[in-house]
Length: 305
Length: 329
Image (cartoon, rainbow over all chains, first blue to last red; front, side, top):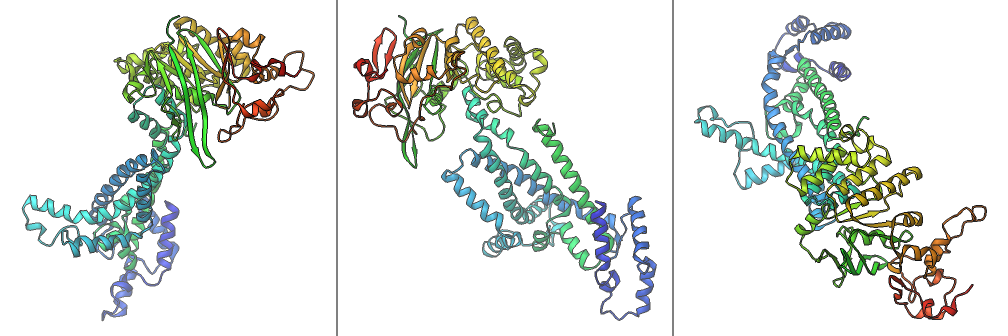
């Protein structure tokens, strides 16, 4: 966490320009005014001094000031985070549940026609660039069919709509980015689950379960219980996206979430917002792998003993 | 005589392989009576395990049963009965003990859970009662401190303990027939004796019939009353156990007996049967054992020998039965 955010801190400051250069570029402002603003924010201090100050603030829980939004970083993130968490959370739940279901189904009939169809489809979805898939979806549902709105989280008239219509409006805006993320996510999880389930399905204990008179449903459960480890690990790795967002998909659907905001913050050299976003992502990364480890120990007693 | 508990008639199991059809089990017939222990003996690759699995329709995918094959248990044909009826038989009336208790047990479930599952599947007992019964059964098969052990996972137990769990799982509902596929092969010699002793004790307690699949003639001598010797997918000799050891009828049986080391032979080289079992895609015409047989003559290459009745319970598949003068000494 510390390493990642420090790296970003240094890299951002090494990059040409700073928040003011970006913001006031081309505006007829006297150079002295810009310099004064820089000095006020301490950006003309040597980098080690800036770094020490930043670190001290972070330790005290101060995330800093967003020049781009002209608000405290904490408030900016408090606005962005729920939107990203909503979209990414829905996509993760869908990917995990459908992916595990599909992969487990395939694993028990590896090599069959149904499995081959599913394997080919997931491979194609898995290898498509996300943004291209997003563009295809836009083309189909917005341009050709005209069923769904293209971008944003709500439509322009959202605030004046009656309650029922507002819910509907939100859902309509959610569908396409959710679909783009889930199609890829389901494929990834299904591929992992298929391979572990296929291996488990060949184990002798599956035959033992049948010999005991367990119904096929129960036999599948026996195998599935031992085939969870890789899927849990993958889910743990996916967790940071809940706070980091998905850059391409958010960008294409103009979803006002963390991924989108981080990219524009980088462009605007909004130092504090970028480092805070990275700090948050790396915190969840660490948390995700810890959580995955914990869950793995719960479902598989062989892990760690 | 009463009708047998299990009656296997012309069991044929084949696979389609790249090398052509493999007739891995090729016309096996035998019976097991209630309370009886029958041993199925032979080298690896002769079709013993597949025969055993077929009795509960547990063959690997791709295996095909011949439509004329029948496996009758208590008068019902296992090979054609509906899934549901088959499931209620498995684990309740007919149980199986597998060779490798490490891989045959589910690694992520407690052993108590796995034993109790049999009870939960076949009876109306609640989870708690099933668990209590499982713990009692684990104690009965000689697992010390069974209540605590039941909460452990297979990898936390020794090989012998795991096989005891396997046996507890098979015997908890007192099945009429237990099929044990090489139950001691994967274990240390000292543990093997304990497990055999346990099986014997359980047999006396419940009166179950036991079909014991093994390649170990020592196990046969200790446990079985009747023996079936299999070679290349066929039964080549069926005999009461005393007769098999005193007067074997088939050269293959003789070879198996000669290959058992005794104190007298310990200083010489061990005697073996030359060659190996041919692959099931390529059974030789005529007698399948002829290429490894010391007595083979031209008739063995042209005619497949039938299984000939020698005595009341003694049958042998060899031309020597009709032409004993061909025997070379």
